[in-house]
Image (tube, rainbow, N blue to C red):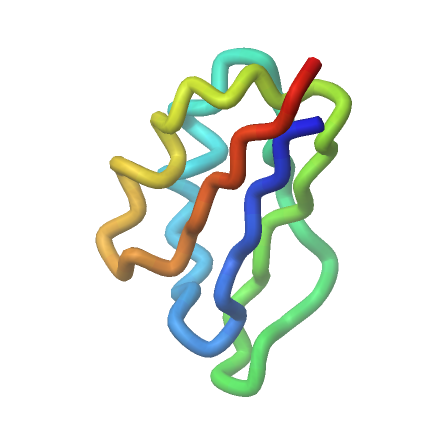
Length: 69
């Protein structure tokens, strides 16, 4: 299973990661971080480990951990 971790301290809720996630493993979140930004949700079963989210994040708040499928 592939896991995307989002560092809530650095995430600014820009949703660029959601826009580049073709399998829709990332979606609009409902949880706010300490600065009031909405942190995206991640669905590990949908993740294909393309890495687009990690490469696109301007705050480098996303880390992708590739697992066996």
